[in-house]
Length: 366
Image (cartoon, rainbow, N blue to C red; front, side, top):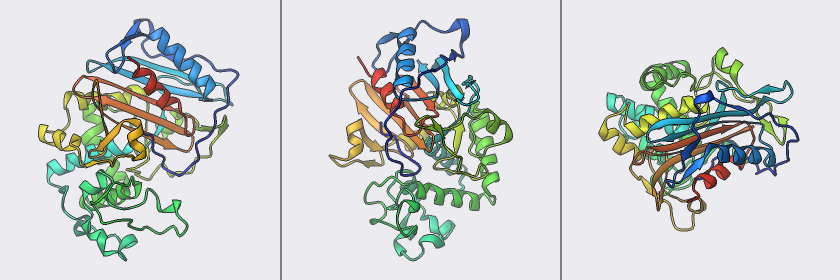
């Protein structure tokens, strides 16, 4: 799987942390002695923890929150390292991390719920619901649909602020090609707010009522309250704190989910058990919408297609869905296989870290 950044930040070389407190598992004395990796191989949790500790030191990752799912159940979780280096505050099982672009597939899940309710359809041009003055200069935007947004085929850039003029633009005929875009998700969020006759706070309430509460996501929030902010790990880049630059009151469909591994894994288990949506909606959610062209950079990580919000990988040992996330000071990834009941999610408070992908490779070893 490929990790995606909310903002364009160069990949940083890691520096070794000299001192790192070894964290605790959330399972106490009931922690399993082994788990099954995504190839079906049994590995000891001692081996997994040794790998994790070594990579944290080597890659300068202050803290992590990790959960592993076997046969549709949470079998292992671990909170390790520092939530705050300066205060010597250890990561706990309740520590909250920024999930960054892990926001996108969860938002797609919410959109499918709204589709089921009849609030919107996947193929109605979004401008018919809500015109978008930011791109009204280009008539092609009137072809953009929710399906195009969720499958990254709008033609929008990832973020307009990554470009010199800071103006929103369209690179190609909407629906004709793949181009990863957070801008599209933010437009769709505006449409959802308009249709629900609400604002950012109201969209968070809609997500909580329709998705979070029914599926047991107690800490996974797009808008941050005082409790989440109190539990939040500080983000780091090369061992130094990264200044917070986002408004916790903005519903960032593309970037603002905050969570921890065990909590987020409840949603992955819902994907496995097909809870929260109809069978038809699950099929639509996970159906290939666009196939990446040969030689696309993402294919090097095994991704072959994009569904509605998910990267899809066809591997010798099964079909997997996932997403990665990068916000300044945080890196995360999840992978889930509904067919095999396997999955995992990891959150870190390290900027553009290679640790999540190193863990993917470790868990893919036959």
